Length: 251
Image 1 (cartoon, one colour):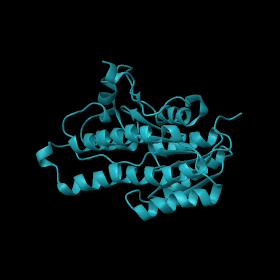
Image 2 (image 1 turned 135 degrees about the vertical axis):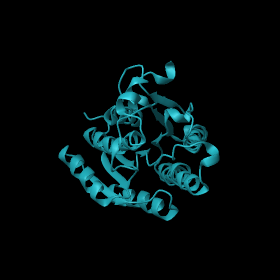
Image 3 (image 1 turned 180 degrees about the vertical axis):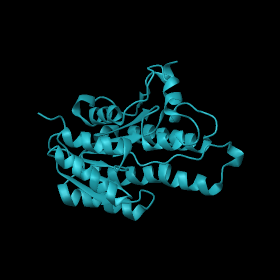
Image 4 (image 1 turned 90 degrees about the vertical axis):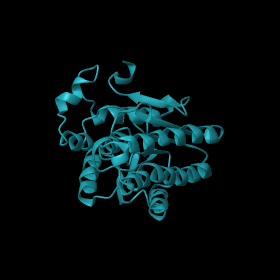
């Protein structure tokens, strides 16, 4: 039996990278998958990949910083499949790499609108639905940058630490109501975000060299952890950061 058979899963930021890999993995695990993003062509590509695994899926174009669009996304999920069993709040962006005093208010506000306000809005709508049906699972995508820090990206760290605060507090709010809420904390993963950082002058080989395992992680490795957290095998885990970083934060 597939571990998420007959479950309904929602993924934000599901058109590339970790989100796309997770949407596909949830489908392979047996879930009906609704995923969102702002790029329609990439959304259709992801949908085709999910359907190739034999899973049902639905792409909804959505901006997580918009309360009305988030509400509509959750409503569309329930209208299409009847319920919402698990949600992976993955949508997020990075900040420019520069010292804090050089960071612009515009970039800071844009980052917080997606990474923090967007997460809050998604959790709020998802939890409201899960309360009506007697439970569910939420996994938030933080970062190892939600636990430690690097120079030059203080707004990004602020946003990812906020993800951890929202995760831990909400997990305590709803633990007795059958809703488990955890966060994943990926390290250096081979995604489009890392490609953009590489374009600033740091090569993939340089990124890989600072990881104890000697390589960058794969989006599929993160996806496998999300699937586990959404499953009954993780039924006693809530309020936790799950670090997937090739040993970086152990050093």
